[in-house]
Image 1: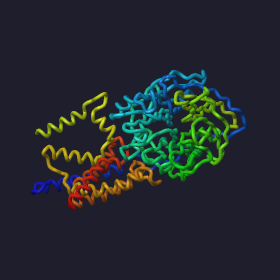
Image 2 (image 1 turned 180 degrees about the horizontal axis):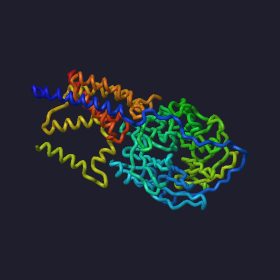
Image 3 (image 1 turned 180 degrees about the vertical axis):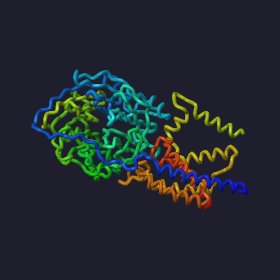
Image 4 (image 1 turned 90 degrees about the vertical axis):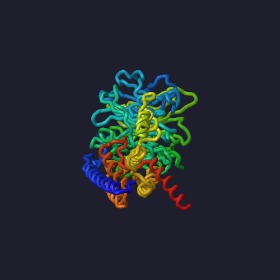
Length: 387
Length: 165
C-alpha cells in the first residue's frame, strides 16, 4: 500500500483511471446493439383442421448397431430433402469415458437407416472447449430457420450428471461436417448442473428457444433464448423447486404454448405441465396432468393437423411400456391411441426416452431407447385424423 | 527478478499441453472460468509478488467483501431453483440494463470508500462482458464467481475471529 506522497498520488491517479474506465465501460455496455427485448412470438406452422378417423400403420426399424453395447437418449430432425438424421449417445456403459455421440440417416423412400457414424467425441469436445471433459450425455438435435443443424449435448467435467453443462455444434451441411464445439453457460455456480433433453422451439425473430433443466440441488426446467450465433440472450424459468426435469415445449400459437415435464423427486407421480399465454415470458405454476410418470422423460409435439401428441410410459413405477396419446385441450385430458410394440419380447423390458417427429410426408416418427441396448425407430403413417 | 521468472515458469507450465489439453484446461474443466474480479485480484497479487506496487490490502479486501458477499447471498440460492424468480437471468444481454445501472452506485460507493479494486473490477468486468471475453454471456459471471466468494467469506470470518481474540 502506497504510504509516501508518491504512493498517494499513484493511488489517486489509479482511482481516476479506473473511474474513467468505468464510465467508458458503462457507455459501451449500454450502447450494446444485441437485442435488449426479445420478441415473444413462437414460430408455428399453420395447421389444417383434422378430418375423419383412420388406423395407424406402424413400421419398426433398428437405428443403432449392436456395438456399442449401451445406447440411450435418441433425438432426430428432418433434413431439407426429407431424410431424417438421428443422434444418440453410446458407449461401453452410461457415463463411461468412451461414450460418443452417434448419428445415422434414414431414407424414407427406401425405408433404410444408413450406417451409424460418430458425430462428436469427448476428446474433440475437450479440445474445442480448451477444458477437461470427463463424459458425454444427452444430445438434442435442432434445425433453425436458416436450415442449419444444431447439435446440443451434455458434457460433464466433474462429478455425476448434476455436474453437467450444455455444449453445441452447428452444421451448415445437414450434419456431414460440424463447427467447433462451444459451451453454454446457464448457471453461476461453476456452470454446473444444466442438461438438455427436449427439442428446441423457434421464435419468429430467428432466435432459438432451448428447453433445459437443472439437476444441482434443485430440479427444475428453464427455457434458454439463443441468438442465431448461439449466444445466450436470456432465460426464463419454467418451474422451480426440486421436482421437475426434462421440459418438452409444444407451442400452439404465437403466444401460447404448453410444456410437459418429467416428475422427479417430488410427491407427484404424474407427468407435470406448465403453460404460457405471452410467448414464454411467464409460465403458470407446475401442475400434474392425468398421465402417470415413473420419473421418466416424455416426448410431445403438435402435428400439422393441430393435434397434440405425447409419448409416455403408462406407469408410475417403471418404463416397461410406451404409449402414444393425443389431447384436444392442450394437455388437460388425453386419449391413448397406440401402444408401442418393441422389436422383441422378454426381460428386461425398458422403452425409454421417447422422441417424436413429424416429417413433411405426414409420417409420425417415434424414436426410443430399448433396454438401453438399441435405438428403435417406429414410423406411423398418420391418418387424416388420429383415432 | 527471480520472482518474475518464477511467475513466468508457472504460466508456461499451465500452458503445457497434456493429451491435447493444456494443464490450465484441466483446472478450467473442474474449476470453471474465473470472474474478472478474481482475475484482477490474481494479477494484483502477482504484481505485488513480483515486487511491484501492492493494490490489495485488508481494507480493499473488506470493501470488496462488503459488495460481493451480499451479491452472492442474493444470487446463488435463487439461481439454484429456490424461487420462481431467477436473478441470474438478469445478467443476460436481453435484460441486463437493470443490473448495469445497479452497478453504478456499487462502483461509486467503493470509490468513495477509497477502494481502487472495486471500481477497477466493475469497469473491467463491464468491458469484458461487452467484449464477450469469457464463455459466459452473463454479466454476473464477470463480476464474481464461487471461488472469489469462498475466498472473501474465508477472509471475513478469519478477520472477525482474529479481531475478537
